[in-house]
Length: 226
Image (cartoon, rainbow, N blue to C red; front, side):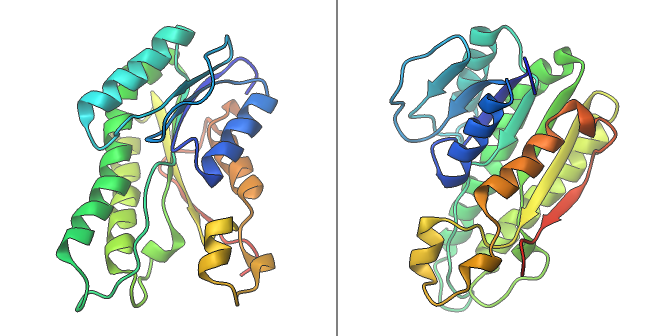
């Protein structure tokens, strides 16, 4: 990743922070985009763009273009921004389905569309999306979330087909990620079986690297030890 310019959305979340740290440790220059406010000033190898609503295409384009302008190029986009909701189909709110679609599909779509011209110009552009193992077979309470993540899977495949030979587009499909929020919500679970953020970051950054130049359209399960 040395010298690569990587944009990470959802960069201030539990997984996003680890991906940013790992990318920078490998020599990448990173643009961190998040809905939360930015907290640190820009440097030559890192810019934080906060307060960005990626469900809005105009805001997504402005943030991506700002990142590309700051670094004069863009080599990889990692779409981590998203959301989760647990409620049954019969008793849940239909608005949850709209919210999940907006947070998971539209954020990835808007960021990808904004980044595509820059990634094509790179000559080795990469898009890595975050799907979900739970979208392969939805369980009770997972309908809205699983449907939206299935949309991310199909978006990944469509973009990979459209830009084959110009941009690689892949997705990681984690099971449960070992984060503080997930531990709090599932305190009786065996945390040791979950996917650690560092493990998932390693897979993401492989797909964003030159080493994965022959991989596109893949939906890569990252199951941890389940």
